[in-house]
Length: 167
Image (cartoon, rainbow, N blue to C red; front, side, top):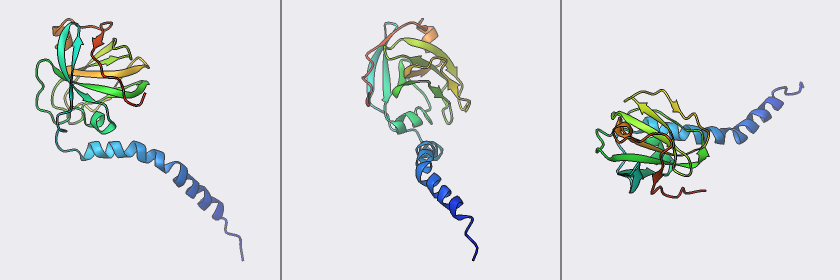
């Protein structure tokens, strides 16, 4: 009888499945949910923000599935309407426009509500637009050109931000 040389390999494979597979599930499930989405998510609760002295009604996406769906499949946004993404913790951020039909501008904000960066996003562009700053706590998407039209630039503060959950 010869020893089973595959036994250590099988034990290692089982170890990997037990320890590493759950990590992949955490990353793949939100991606699978995005790919399966076929319609806009229902309108989320709205908060009134002050951005450069202007009132803005922003839907609040503060749960993972809400942030993942974002403004996908929306046909339009009102002039002073947008979506506020509340991050689970400050860090680098990245957004894309898969299945998003409305041209947007995104503002990356720190925990104090200071606008750090502005980026124009093109409909259906799946290239991730990453933040240059590593401490993004919020992201505010508005119709493209809204920040320029309202003379709002990096360095300005957004007030009325909800407190992040989980921090």
